[in-house]
Length: 475
Ligand code: PEP
Ligand code: MN
Image (cartoon, rainbow, N blue to C red; front, side):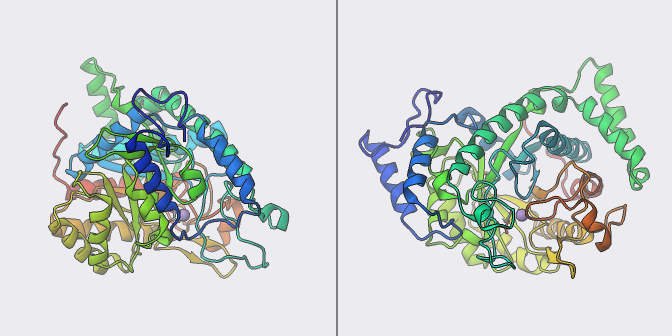
């Protein structure tokens, strides 16, 4: 198995005929993939899948190992309470929205929210996009209301309701991978350019304050950010630091044929593992985390920092079991536990989990996904979420961590910089009858730009109050 001609010296793809370490990892990978795996497509022809995977093995990696290593360091700081993790983007990327404008809108939003957080808390924010490979979707049903195979994301089949479109097509994996390479390249460029410039981000936040009905409430905060930037400028600093230009990408490690194609041996850690060339950060979803199944076994083999979604059915014992398996060496920030409990459950379900994991001595990142436990379908058939429920789950998450003295490490949002009407509420009071106007998501409803900024201003203050600033040590 080759990774690519661009792999760094020392990085080798696991090879069943190669060195002992490569053989061992290739065998462990094969054993993981031989386990039962939920949510995989019913490909019509395995021979075509094998041919596609062979091509993926020599494709250009999406991410560089040095970037992934940098993210691991950043997440260790989050786990120690010295930084925040802000993850966000589309529920599902689509081929149709593979445009510079869409990426610019989503990344710009993430970086503008990060600026607000950093100002409120005095802590660095690690920006992690749901992008450059967030194409595969787990689904609750096998067939849709019309009896067609469900849409499983653009990497598998088409969203159009025809049987031709819904037939899984392995060639889509090649297009997804090529898109991901382009997305990452553009993301790096944008973040080294205008999106790495706090003054430019601030100018956009000023426009938000001017144009949004909620803007007035946040004008003082924005004005303060402006003053801080003027201070920096007066001191001869631009605020354009190397850290400001960082951007990381993530997706759900769902489609195993895809995920297993671009791996390289990484011997930099306490044990040799496999580093994914497809993303800096991968997470395992709520529907594919059965402990004996393939996805968790696959995640155990990864050198990348990983996330695990935990829903309200998770027990403290299960959580600790996951932590032992996914962070066997006690590496701070190696594992992010992404709680998605629902606004009405988080205060009951999360505390014993946090207590038991903390008592285990492992330093995980605690991240709140206030989206996936708060979905509902309207009578007219739109899957949606209420802004107030999103806010309420975050508030509950913060209360739990404040009470237990643990660090509320971050947020995981489905949010877009575009002006969609997919979630209810916010300052503009989007109502059920407004949803059809610009309901554009291919899967779950996203906060729009205005709702996202409103959330950022509101919760940044809450995070600040709950977290005494402990600036990261200069290094
Ligand atoms: C998602 O993040 O889009 C998702 C499917 O989440 P979960 O696994 O938490 O349901
Ligand atoms: Mn989703």
